[in-house]
Image (cartoon, rainbow, N blue to C red; front, top):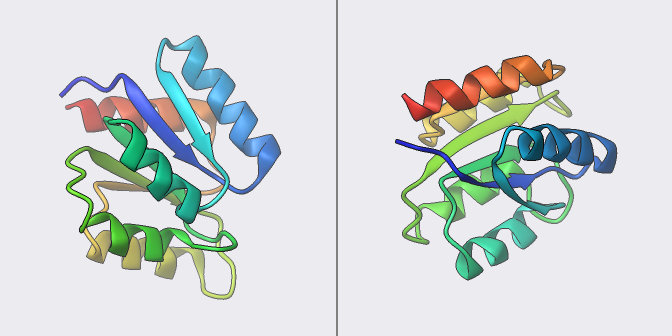
Amino acid sequence: MSIEQILLIEDDIDLREAIEDVLLEHDYQVETASNGKLGLKKLQESPFDLVICDIVMPEMDGIEFLQQLTGTGYNGKTLMVSGGGRLNTVDYLMIAESLDADLTLQKPFSLEQLLNAIKELEG
């Protein structure tokens, strides 16, 4: 599967911009959202091959986003990322995997690790 269009959902503006810049440099088309609620809205407006989504966010976190994603007809890939919060990071990532996230990545991660994860999802 070829990944061209990516939706990046991340509430940390600095991290969101850094990831967006790297993805654009690698010729991906990128849309961004600052929480899951806005991410779902963008998914209704445009098709995406990959959603990269943080788990701990305001308004709608990544777990709720994943739960609601199943009812949207989205058939692309999901890469869930987390640096933790109230729960241990590994717990969040395990929950994401149980909700059929295609891949998870623990923060902090390098931009190279992120690009490798995207390549892995392309298969």
